[in-house]
Image (cartoon, rainbow, N blue to C red; front, side):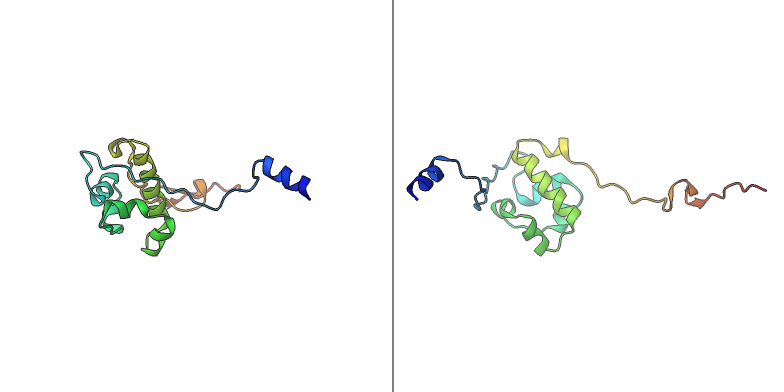
Length: 124
C-alpha cells in the first residue's frame, strides 16, 4: 500500500482540476471607459441586448449568465469573443465586424437564382 501511495505522489495528476480560472478584468482604456462604451464599440447593437451597469460586472459574465439575460447564442459567442480580444489588448475598432446579412436566395443550389426558379431543359 505504501508503494502505491508513493507512486501516486510522485506522478503528476492525470485529471484536470475542477477549479475554473477567472481572469482579471482588463483596465478601461482612454477611449473605452465603461461597460456600455465597450458594448457600443464592438457593434452589432450589443449595448441594447445586454444590460450591464458596472465594468466589473461585465467581465464576470459568462455564457450561462448571458443566456439567463436572454441573449441568443450568436450574440453570446460574439460578445465573449470580443471580450477575449479586448482582454488580449486589441482595439475593438480593429477586430469588430458587422453581422452577416440574411440570405436572400433560398433553395437548392443552382435551381434558384436571384430569387427565381430556373427551369432546366428537358430532353424531347
